[in-house]
Image (cartoon, rainbow, N blue to C red; front, side, top):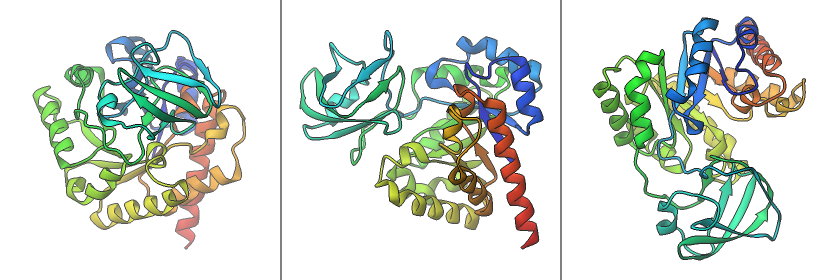
Length: 322
């Protein structure tokens, strides 16, 4: 089974990466929504020195994100904010797709806004506040916002991916088989056809069309952050189970991600519920599990991998006893 961490400021040191490997980590994810491969040359060198041979890059794809902020913003309940011209930078395609009354979820749903009016910006009221940082996700429940499969930055990254040691590409918000074909063609054009494709299921379109693109991908990623924004949160576990069942039936490997050990961004010990979540993912047949912010920005990146690995091993022992 594969255990992936995510590289970030909290673990971008050779000694830390080496400790994570000893704790059980088998590969790393690099989130390119926060910078290109070229901008992360220092991290790539660290990965090479640490001897990590499995590197996944997470593209921007059709994901919607806040733009660059001069500094983090604290948004308070009831506050009026603008997204777009003169306010918080956001993709221009939002302005054409959104009507007054629409709700927006920011940063995997941590913040909630209501759109009151639309002109050259989205005039919003903060319904659930918090700290907003650059490049955080935007979800628009119930609305499919037209956007290209690959951004210009994605294409630039794909052209150098093979030379950077990339072994797998994660495509966010897969909507159809055409998205996968577009990525496959871009990899072939970059002479990187050997790189595996990991399809992230993050919206209802991806859930609906999964049977169509399942044969075209190397692995399915059940990305529960934005997928949990696309439906009432209490319906997410059933959606996860259905996706897992389809993958098992098709003999397709799948990975479970998002908030697996989220409390360990601040605490050295996880919750019992988090450990049970990892255990159940293994029991359901997951081929891989991955942590994100826990190792990228959390306080205990090595302990995160240790708990992840030990819990998976406990689940595997239990399954052998059955």
